[in-house]
Length: 315
Image 1 (cartoon, rainbow, N blue to C red):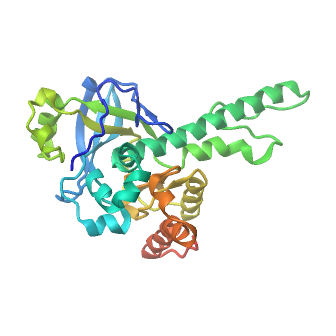
Image 2 (image 1 turned 90 degrees about the vertical axis):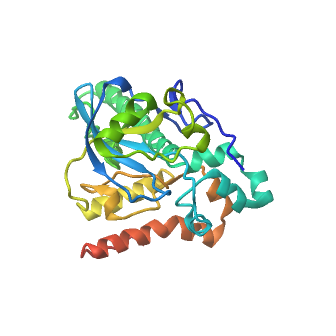
Image 3 (image 1 turned 90 degrees about the horizontal axis):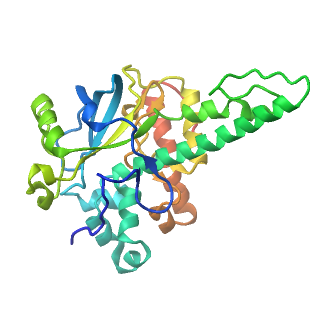
């Protein structure tokens, strides 16, 4: 069984190409990407999600996460546990005939492929940021219209006024996770050789058909442009970390892989297996089963803090 889902990375301006949440293409030009360093290396397994690099784009340093294509070998046991390592063919088999009737193949891909999962998460965060920006502008206009009202905020910092908790909400939302500035489609003809020669990375889990194409015809590498955080510190301000995780959950985002390795200076950097509502898998669970799956990340948070020697009560 092979996937029939198609999308055009070369021409798309926002992804995934389905109804709902989307992330826009990065404003920079991909031919200006200069690879500086390899920041993370996942073990050499066919289930790896990708690699993160320090790059320079138009004179600015970023963290560039290049996401592998669908894994070619996936253990059914792993998928049955949490769909952590995902490919559409395996998901279709596990769903069975009734499940396949309920969930179109394109939705399986656009909700669960690690690249699209991150696109949807950051699409939701940016959507909420936009809403808060509108609220802040409304507050600013109203403040100007009220005699004696003192405007105390600067651009991008919210508004300190008698309006209460909305004052700093925008800033809080911006700090829920390491910011993502958009995605890039990196031409294989140029960048696969650069990455191979500099870092020795050659396997992107391409399909056999794509792998056998001439390099100029291969699918572009799928990349997410994120803020660069050079610090080695992972856990920072536990109370804020828990607050951020709860805020994400209020936005319908479930990170599902809470561990110190997925944090930088207390901010989440990875959403490869996250759920963002609406999500096809959430529709398969009801009641206690759904609650347990949604709350598992809170238990993971407690365990992470316990390893760090910090007592928390996330749940």
